[in-house]
Image (tube, rainbow, N blue to C red):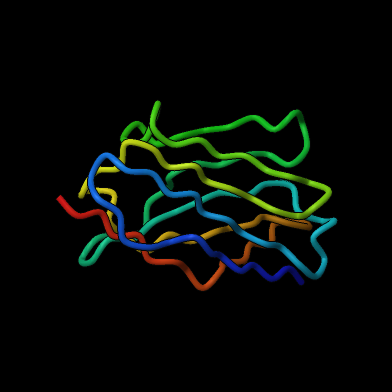
Length: 118
């Protein structure tokens, strides 16, 4: 089993930056992909960015964050990061860390609130 804990959320003004972190524990050796998702009030959860843990760490971004957000991982430390720059009010949401591991398993963190004021 894999457990995820996010940190780094908070309140920031539009144009500012935040860095989210996600610490993986448990059977983290079996993780093959990780990602950040977000859910704004009244909206469905959406993918923000994903990264493969093997296969060279290929990344994928939602169009709305391309050029502003960067996903990265530190495999030895079992950490996942999301650097968010040029934040906009529409980036306000609860951000969740997700990990895919083993044969088709997936788990979520508890989420961290990001609020961008205009």
